[in-house]
Structure formats: structure tokens, C-alpha cells
Length: 301
Image 1 (tube, rainbow, N blue to C red):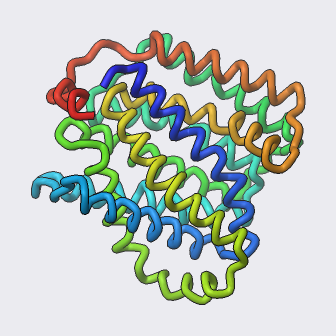
Image 2: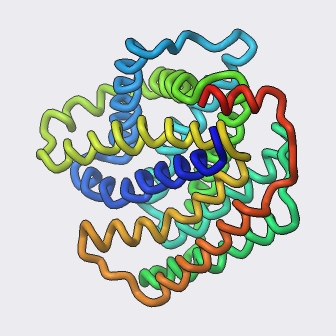
Image 3: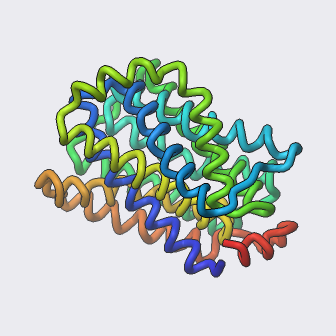
């Protein structure tokens, strides 16, 4: 897979994820955070399990099963559950700033786990995106207030960063749909204890909440994570992760189109800074590195 195709897949995934924040607000009017997280995992897992009937998925090698299971638990069960719980008590503006640490965490983890190294330009781009993120947050009228509960958001960012790096490691040996399907199966096992609280909420859910949860499970989760894995198969993890910075501006556009929430000039200015910073990371951010098996992974992707 070429780098341009990989980056297109990354931004397609980010587009799905950024719109999911607006959609989740609809679903959370009826579902509690843990129930919504569980429902999202179950729907995504069912979707890819159906796909597995037509696409040969198989099972990971014995030595990779710990990586697969841990990536699913961290990147899906822990990330969604912790983040949804945190958003009940942490202001969304604070959460957006703290989640902006994820690309930096990916860069740090990548060096030790998969040997990817950012150039000076790459670090400049990652750090330069943070002021743009702040402009977007304050342009939305949000304020920053750090509390003990904000630690939950940091934990969610760490879990998501670990998922990205572990997925990148697996991409050298498996196809994207395999890695995501296995990860979702792992997440499903850990989410099953919460399944009983989902049933009564689904039975009494209004149509808009059901449609929102369906979009979150099938679109933002199943399709979104496969696209993200395809991106990781064809581009360095730190470069792909830098696309996460585009989430707040895209979420603002989604809110504008779906909820008539008009963005302020500060939001637009912040979006321009973020896009410029991400472009810098994409074009000049990662030192050349020949990862074992990466070429074959790109051909499979």
C-alpha cells in the first residue's frame, strides 16, 4: 500500500471518529457510558465476524496472541470505557487537550517498541499542533479545568497510543482486517460481563439512540478501525497518529452540519495550524527505517 493511500485511509478513519462524538451525544441521551461502550464493541465484533465468514481471518501465531489480546483490551475495552466514564465528569475541552497527548505518546512508544524515530521536524510538527488544538477548544467556548478525574482521560490516551503501536507491530505479519477482528474478539471477551446491563437499555431505546449506536458500532468502530489498521500497514505509526490532531476541527465541522453549531474564527484558525503541523509531520517527520516485513505488509494491505 502506498503512503498516500495509507494517509487517505487514516483521514477517512478520523472523519468517522470525529463524527462519532456528535453521534455519541445522541446515544448517551439514553444509554449509560459503559453500556454504550459495550454495545459498540458487540456490534463491531459482530460486523467483522460476519465478514470473517467470507474473508479468511484465521488465528494469530501463538507468539502474537498476547499482543493481539492486549491491543484489543487496551484500545477498545479500556479506551472506550474509561473515556466515556471520564466525560461524565471532565469538561470536553479538558478532554480534548489531554487526548491531544496521544500522538506524542505514540512517538515515544514507537521508539522503544517498533524502532520508529521522529526527526526534529517531526517533533516540531507534533508540538506545533498543540497550540492549534488549544485555539479550537477555546474557540468552541470551552475552558480548561484539571481535576483528579482528568487522569482518566490521560489513561485513555495512553491506552489508545499503546493500541496504535501494538497494531503497527502486528501489521508486519498480518492483514489489517485480521488484526482488527482479533482485537475486537478480545475486547468482546472482556466486555461480556457488562452485556446484561445493555439488554434492558436496548429494549427501551428510542429509534434515534438505536441508529446512533448502530453507526458507532458498524461505522466508527468496525470500518473505522479497519481503515486505521490499513493506514498503519502503509505508513509510520507516528505519522498516522498525527492525524488524530484533525479530530477536533472535524468534530466541529460535524457539529456544524448535523447540529447547526457554527464554528468561530478561532476554531478555523486553530484548524489551519493543526493541518499545517500534521502536513509537516507527514512530509518530513520520520527518519528512514526499513522494518522487517513492512514491505510484504504493504503489498497485502
